[in-house]
Amino acid sequence: MLILYAVRAVGAGDVKLFAVLGLLLGKVIITRLIAVSLISGAVIGIVELCIRKTRLVELGGYKVKVHGFHYAIATLAAYVVVLGYGIVVSI
Image (cartoon, rainbow, N blue to C red):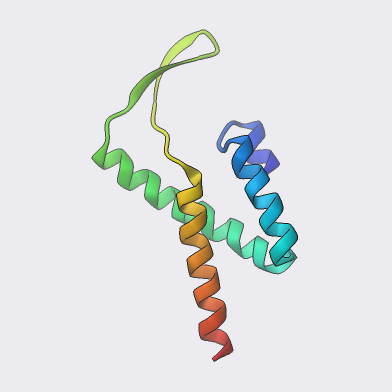
């Protein structure tokens, strides 16, 4: 997640959230969670791009049209999928 933070794809809060989740869930589950959250984030981003308009913000002195959403929503969706998959497989 630090790599995604370095290229400004996620915020510092998302990095801290994944650090805590990694501490609590372990290496295997957090790896699955990161992979699924990237996919769910892409899907949510595409859906929101179709529904909402972009906004004008200033990045590095330039005014740029950007679109943003809270990545915690994608993380929650990924957590539900990974947890649900773990429950289904264990049954």
